[in-house]
Structures are given as C-alpha cells and as structure tokens.
Amino acid sequence: MNLKPFSLVATPNLLLAAVLFFPACQKKPAEPTVRPPVPVTLGVVAQKDMPNHKEWIGNLQGTVTSLVKPNVAGNIIQRYYTEGTVVKQGQALFQIDPAPFQATLDQAKADLSSAQADATRTEQDFVRAQNLLAGKVISVQEFQNKQQVYQSAVGIVAAKQAAVQSAQVNLDFTKVVSPIDGLTGLANYEVGTYVSPQSTQPLTTVVAIDPIKVVFQVGQDDYLSFISGSLKDPSNAAEQRKEDTAEGMQMLLSDGTVYPQKGVFRAANNQISTQTGSITVEGLFPNPGMLLRPGLFARVNATLGVQQNALIVPIASVITIQNLNQLAVVGPDNKVSIKNVIIGETTREDAVVLSGVNAGDKIVVQGIQKVTDGCTVMPLPETAPASTGGTAPMESKAPASMPSPAK
Image (cartoon, rainbow, N blue to C red; front, side):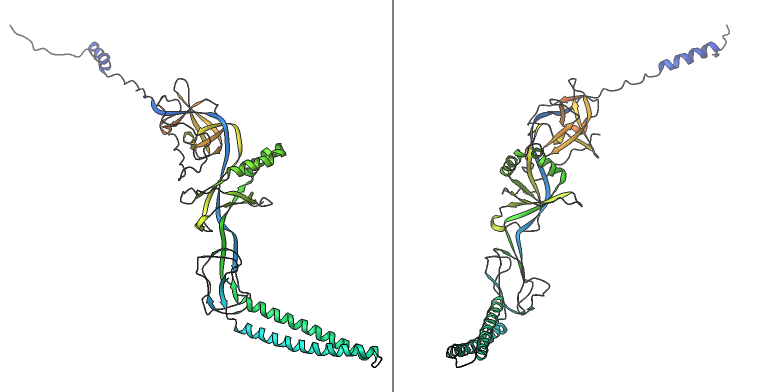
C-alpha cells in the first residue's frame, strides 16, 4: 500500500483562526499599585492668646563713649593707665610736658604781684587825694586824675589774676584725666609724641559699658502693632508699657548664645525715618564683668502686647515655597489636603495663621516632606506636644530651620 506524504496547506480559514488565537495568549496589563499610607505625626490648630514676640537685629554700643583729646599742645612724657582696663572719672591717663606751662604760670604770678604793688601805691595816693580835696588843698581835676590812676591799677590787677587762672588751667590740662567711669581703649600716641587740640585722633577712648546699650531699628509695621491697642483706647497705654517692661528684652548673640541677663527699654527716637521706614530704639542690658563689648551684633527679642484668640500651629508644619505658605490638613478619612495659608507672627517654634484653616483642624507636623495633596496618611503616636503656644524664641541656642517644601 502506497502512502502519500502528509503536507500542511494553509487555508484562509486556518490563518484567520491563528490571528484570533495569538492575541488571546498575550499577558494582560498589570493593575496600578496602591500607595501605602504615609506615616506622619499630627498636630492640631490651636486657638489661644499669643504673646506678640518680635525680633530685631541690633548692635551693642556704650552708653557713653568719650573721646579723650588734649586741651593743650605738647609732648607726651608719661602714660599712667594700662590699655583695656577700667578707670574712674578723674583718673590720670596721660601727662603732657608741664614745664612750659609751669613757666607761664610763674610769669603770670610775678606779673600779678607787680600789679598788686602798683595798685597798693595808687590806692594810697587816692586816699590822700580824698583828704586833700576835703581840705580844698587840691583841685577837683587833680583828685579825678588820682582816682582814674587807681581804678586803672585795680583793672590791671584783675587782668593779671585772670592770666594766673588761665595759666593754672593750662597747667592742669597737661595731666589728661578720664572724663567718665569706663573701659579704656588702646592709646593712639606713644610717649614722646607731640599732640595738640588739632590732632587728628584722640589720645584714647573711654566707654561706659555697664550697662551696655543695644541699638536696633523697628519697622513702622511693628511700631503700629505696638501702639494699636493704645490707639483704640489711650488709657491702656501706660498699662501696656508696664506689662511690656515687666517682660523685658532678651538678647541672642551672633554665635547663638542666649545672653542670661534681661534688658529693659531705654529710649526711642522722636521720629520715623522716611528713608528706611523704621524708628531707632535703644535697650539696656546689665554687663557684669564688662565682657560684652561695643560693636557686637545681636538679635533682640521683646514682647509687644498679646494677640488674642490667635490660631497657632507649630512652625515645623508650615510648608514654604517661595512666598507661598501651606499646611497639610488631614481630614476624617486621613486624606491630606494642601491648603494655602497666610502666616502672621512667628517664633522659633510656633506660627500664627491669619487665614486658610480653622481651629481644631488636624495638620501634619512631622513627615511633611513625604505627603502630597490627596494622599492617605497613617497617624503615629505623639511623643511631645505639637505646639508650645507661644514659647519665646530665645530658649534655643540655634535658630530653627524651615521645613523643606513638599515634593
């Protein structure tokens, strides 16, 4: 029996079946993965009275800075003080060569003695002339001549006395003394240098620095905030100043060190600068040991009244992107809604929200960099209070950094 070889012939029906079969064998696309909840720590928008803390940049100055200059010309022959030490008012600092001034004083005294002798003689002549005129021995004209000579002699004596006093003053000026109690600076002239009242530099400086003065600029908005309560009711001005004075000022040095002494308000300028829109304010801080020196920069913190019923959030919860501030508000279903807010007063720990959220809203405090609008979060147990409710910004030694924007 002869068998024919089997051959496979592709018919149109077979090709159509193959086309319909192969797509059915392809894999189905993977379903999108569900993002797990983001673990975060939540806080609450609190409503309470917020002390109106303000902070400004200032620099330290002496309460009095005295430029010690010579009042007479001459060579410096001695320096009495040690540079950088504390001196008392009237304490000798320099000695200018007194010899020329002593000679001038001696000459003035000699001239005074001669004038006094002449005055005594002319006085005796004048007394005799009075007696002779009474006996009609001399004429009125002769008596008047004697009287004029005597008066001239008296005037010469007065002039010589003034010359003696002037010479004595100049001699006293050769010993240059400290005009105030304070800390001395470096000497600008060495022994042997010729100095005069026209010298370009002072001999040295003496600065009173206990207490020490801090000078800073307060913007007109802060100033208006400070007086806002008094504008509404002027009778509150005195009470408000008393409360602010009781709070005192705090100072943070440039390296982040909190100065332990509290300061007090000293004075404010009588006008606001039209160029800068600020007013110059001065405060005083105790400076035991005179360790703080003029020229240091510092941040000054003070309380200017209280903002009542303010909405408070932790500063770490604020998302800052350029000039836009946002909060990540968490709803009842643990979904996040990013809301734009307006921030007012801030401290190193808290911020006042002027609009955008309500009291009692839950917000993300920690883990804010991981959340996005519409994501789901998993609240973690709180390990510390979310907000301190207006803690003064001077309690930390380094400024808190702002959180990174949400990505």
